[in-house]
Length: 183
Image 1 (cartoon, one colour):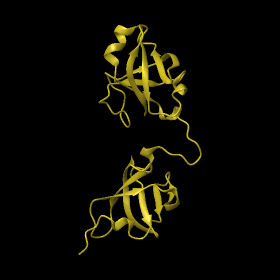
Image 2 (tube, helix red, strand yellow; image 1 turned 120 degrees about the horizontal axis):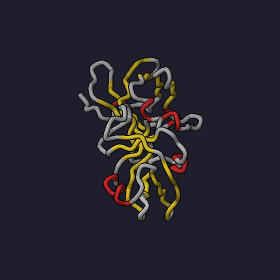
Image 3 (cartoon, one colour; image 1 turned 30 degrees about the vertical axis):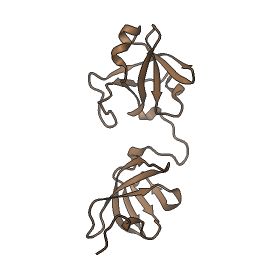
Image 4 (tube, one colour; image 1 turned 45 degrees about the vertical axis):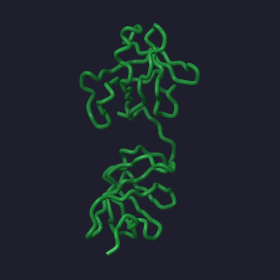
């Protein structure tokens, strides 16, 4: 499952929600099957949708003052909507489309990282970085090293084979040692 966004504020009396979307085009949710509504503390990234999470369907989607506004078929009015404020809306990964060269963050987890043909680490996760670059958080597997390295995802530095879990990195000199204390 992929997080689509959160139900922000109840809008009006018909059970509509202003929607805080984390996807590029939230209007794609309209007509999508397999949507799941879950409390915000439940992470459905790699988990099955168990109660209190539940499958829902959209009964409406519109824009309200440049914000997405949606209505769920299972939520007929404001009274039924109020307890669901802040809940997360998840969508099936199969319903998402990626442009050429794009990937999901979870596809990077566990990939082996190589520099000049030598294994140097394993990807723990991808995090948004402060300068607009994603940061590849890598477990350092070089002899005598421990901990993790945060490496910016700058396309020119990386060659990706995500299906093969193999990433080649051509970093600037000293990048992998920037956090090391000298002897």
